[in-house]
Image (cartoon, rainbow, N blue to C red; front, side):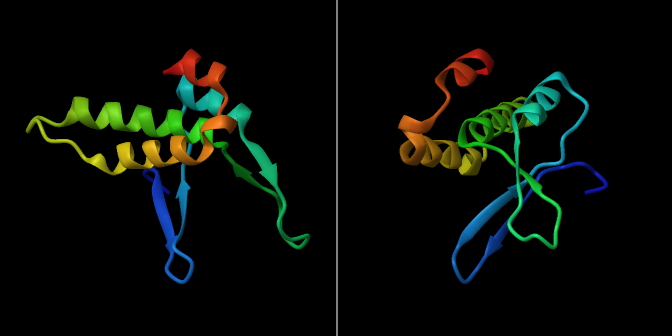
Length: 104
C-alpha cells in the first residue's frame, strides 16, 4: 500500500479474485475514482469502493501497456491480457462501450 502499487487477493476456498488498486494522482486515476461505486456489505463497516468491469478493463489495459513499454527484453506478461479477455467474455453486454472507447 505504501508504494501505491496494485495487488490481487485470492480466496483459495472459492477462487474469488479481488484486485486492489490504490489510485495515484493522474488524470486517469482521478477520473476512474469518480466512477467507482461504494458498497456496504455489513452495517458495522464503512462502504468500500468497487470498480465496474469497464473500469477494470481500462485499468488493466493501461497496466498492460505500461508494462510492455517498460520491459526491455521484448517479453510480456499475459496475465493482465487474460484478465481483460475474461472480463469481456463474461461482461460483454454489460460493458460501458462509451467509456471504453473514450479511454482505450
